[in-house]
Amino acid sequence: MGHLKTPVEVKFWWPHGWLKRDPRRHLKFAAYVQWMVNRLLVGGLRYGPASKTQCYYKRAMMELEAYEKTGNMEHLVNVSNYGFLECQTPSIKGAHFANDVKSATRKKFGTGGFVGEHEK
Image 1 (cartoon, helix red, strand yellow):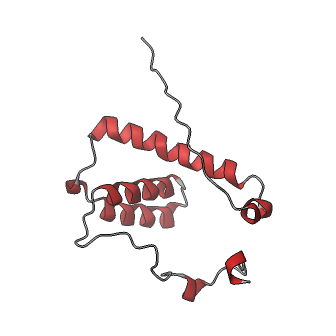
Image 2 (cartoon, rainbow, N blue to C red; image 1 turned 90 degrees about the vertical axis):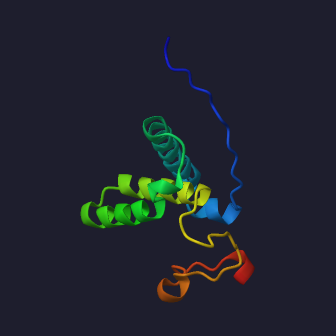
């Protein structure tokens, strides 16, 4: 018996201005998410369910270092997945989600010249 595939539809809501800047951006994002899903499924089959003992935060940092050395974007997909897994089973004491936090990068790197609708 062959492998069965169950399609799962996920809808994202894109601001018009975001797509106007790059009309194919949503297709690129969908492809990236599919890469993530593919690797999560393989990892789940190989290593089982997510666990705090897997040190996802440290693994993500190691993948970033590997990306810096090689330029292989596969490492960025791994970072994304480890970020997801870390959210599911946090290893950092006091881990939480607060969407009102100030950006850790904007002060140093700016916004790339983009001014959002809410900032006009």
